[in-house]
Length: 238
Figure 1 (cartoon, rainbow, N blue to C red):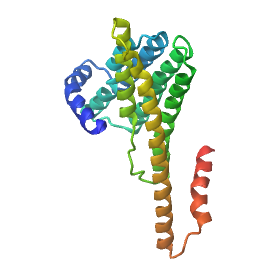
Figure 2 (tube, rainbow, N blue to C red):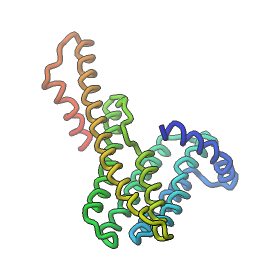
Figure 3 (cartoon, one colour):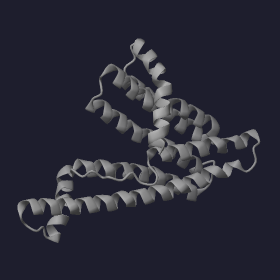
């Protein structure tokens, strides 16, 4: 839902800014790199100090680069495999920095080892959720499922909760508990999403094997249906 509606809205809003950068000779790749650097700075400088409000302000200013660079590429007619690869890779880096910043806070000044572990789980599960879709598509499966909590939802839930939790330092009572609640929601939602995607890939893989066997006029054995994806995974690992 967030990808469909919020992304379209902010794309329209940021189009004039993207045009301005193009006129100044700034490339989409430069925007991607600067945006990721800004997100990392906001997360790894402010969050470990417990400055959740200001850290979220900095991150929010830079996180929209993900929309600006794509808008610039479309205006320039330069959409490419390299741009898509760079953008996707640096998205993973930025996500890791955000949840890594939370983990550093709870491992240090936040003094909560359980929430430190939850933050690390959010970091790892977010990476794996993205990987399952990419890996499924790389072996020719559509992976026709979005899941409960995708990247947009993970970021919105975490950053809004972090920013509001930071208002505790401005005298707002009790609001600091929003971030722990949000981290648990993201952790559980990411786990559900991971299961949804694994189940979908399993089903689509079986359907693909059956279709291939029918086309060849043979019946695939259970061993064949199980073996081929693993062989492909081993070849990819090499």
